[in-house]
Image (tube, rainbow, N blue to C red; front, side, top):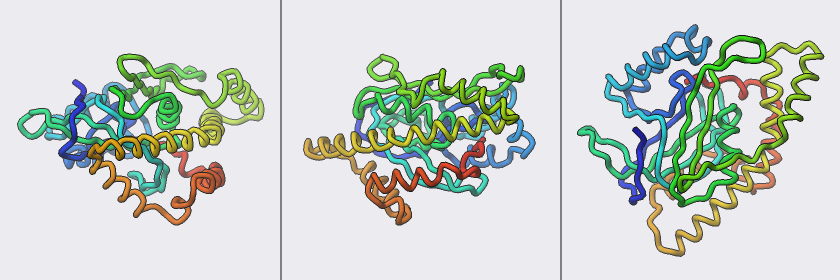
Length: 280
């Protein structure tokens, strides 16, 4: 089941993508309790089918609102900083969507859901590459999920995928560099004796750096969309409140104009800690 609506929202919810669940989930006390109790060794092991099934069932049985995809209209975008489950400060992509969420009786009610995804992650960068070709205010289905896949070292890994459709059509990503360039970088790092985890992290850093201009493109498009909707007299109170809260919590550097903010992000490319996996 996916949440879906085009109506004006009356409630707001926060959502995240959990690598352990392999799906999007709406934040709730039940979800927080279940995910917070996951042992460190399970987190380190990462996604696998059995773990994800068990955790999903616990969240559902505990009354946590949960779903794998969001359907509605994208009406908000921001990139800001937040603290993850490990206490590490990260950049997050925040996407707001007008949709519907079931209440305590199971009835679908209009709502705005704000989905936050770590930018410096495979799934965060994948989402960013697709948002470049997406349009605000259009019928949208956003899915995030994981599947087990064999890696180049022969081991099985959780492969995290982002799907984005608008008006029934798949939104194609704008890749920051060709796959051939990525494979050449991988081969060079391997020849230098780097292990697989270090290679993965270096490729992620390179992709992040080349993705930064896309953030500015989508930010400017969102600002234009908001001005148009404001002029048309539409009610975007929840999005306005979220934007005000994001600006209030932002640091002085984040409040700089787009060009200066982009330069600040470039300086942070070498921050290894912020590239660590956020499993929860």
